[in-house]
Amino acid sequence: MAFKNILKNVRIWIVIIALIFAVVAIHPVLDSKGAAIRNVIKDSAAEKAGIESPDPNTAPTKREVITSINNQLVNNIQDYEDIIKTLQLNQTVRINTNKGQYVLRTLPLTESIVLNETEWINKTFTEDNQTYTHLVLQNKTETKIIGMQDIGLKVYEAPTSNLRKGLDLQGGTRVLLQPENETSAEDMEIILENMKQRLNVFGLSDVIVKSASDLPVYLGGTGMDFIIVEIAGANEEEVKDLLSQQGKFEAKIANKTVFKGGNDITYVCRSSDCSGIDPTTGCGQNNGEWFCSFRFSISLNPEAAKKQAEATKDLDIVPSETEMRYLSEKLQLFLDDEMVDELNIAEGLKGQAVTEIEISGSGAGITQQAAVLDSLDNMKRLQTILITGSLPVKLNIVKTDSISPTLGKEFIKNSVFFAVLAMIGVALVIVIIYRKLVIAIPILITMISEIVLLLGTASLIGWNLDLAAIAGIIISVGTGVDDQIVITDETLRGEQKAYSLKERIKRAFFIIMAAYFVTVVAMLPLWFAGAGLLKGFALTTIIGVSIGVFITRPAFASLIELLLKE
Image (cartoon, rainbow, N blue to C red; front, top):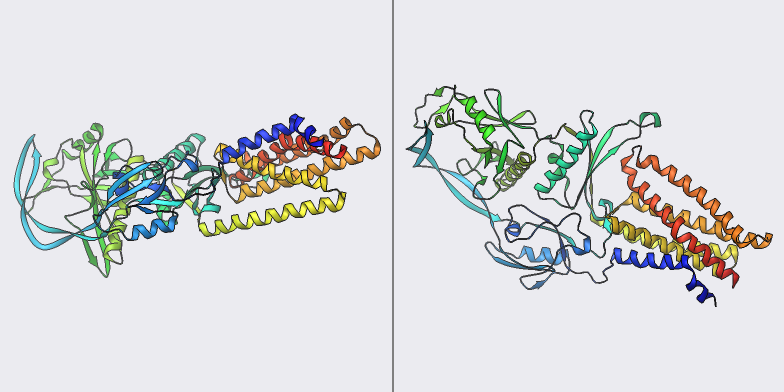
């Protein structure tokens, strides 16, 4: 009889329907296999084969997952890494994913070595709209293969649900930045968008860039603005320099700025045919340390080219014993007001509105291969800054956290274990106090329902679950147990004092609603007034208690009423 009455209750059906939608949103996968693609490195073999970096807004279970490589099954990350280690140079690789098949060829990692031998080569230059060619004696270079490039994929374990894990649970890097000067809301928006673009151009996805503020001074805080950048699966050194640089790139001739990074540059070459280790200088050793030079070409817009022509038209031509002569001033490259390189300007470029420019720089390392990799990393950062432009203000790194994914796995395992223990403990206490098992069962069902609904909401809105969010879940479920006890206590007390059922429920929900509004009001300062680091805790708590007050706890009241009547 009680079961039939339960199925007739509208409040209980609302919870059941909400639970169905929550499970669909979470989309648990019981047997997940493969290695999910997190990032695709620019200009890598994988990108050239057509593999794309995932859209950060794509649900985890909808992401592309590698299932096999060269007909060898990939069940997890370890399988993927073991297969990649066996690949040879210039080997054809067939990668199967849940979305298709790709064929790529492994690329060599090369370096250019300058030889002592010399050769005569043809050099061309333009003067007065006339093109001239003459022979120039130049050092020979030799390209040497020093290894195999990575195929360009960063992967992680195939998702088991649509729940998005924060860095605390999946590992990665968190950087806290502070603007050097006070910033307006408009400048902060520009900074956030620019940084997102920088990280995407650099080849990183799964990136969260958000603003945060300390509490106002009158509430005991500093009132300072901060920026939080969270990058899953990236190491600290990979992103720290890129984030802290303002990226104010300027090219000057005779202390006059001729072009800047961003709008003045229409194209930045990142392919191997026009970027990489400079073949004319290559790598060299000095005092036990290796140095390697890089170069890449860029295209300027007509306005920037015209500025360059104006800056060079009155310069003198420096006499030279060789056939190649240069102007009296050099093209100096500045990054964040520090000169990173200077380039000679050929005499044929005097007064010419040239749109094609070659940028160069260098890197260093203990070994030759380390110097090559450092040089290529520096080139990649500079290319990214030239594409995205500069930030309105310089940012200082306040703190960096590098989080191991192993700790996150252990935390999740321990959290689930202790959550089950806590629920069993609550049930035992309820049975001991009320001496009725029929009361403990609905409380357990309600607790589980609230957790599922909260996780379903997080999956639906794409909210990342981190330590702060888990703390919010604990708070909301804890207040739920408290409210359920209030409802139970008022119902039993009402029977003793002969209150009507309507009056008993009304008394219970008056207490519950008062507690609800107090909790929400307490969380709002953490959300709006600042303390951005605790925003996840505040939001999760507010959503959790709202789900409980308006969905699960009314259903619990109806359920406990029906069971106690029976």
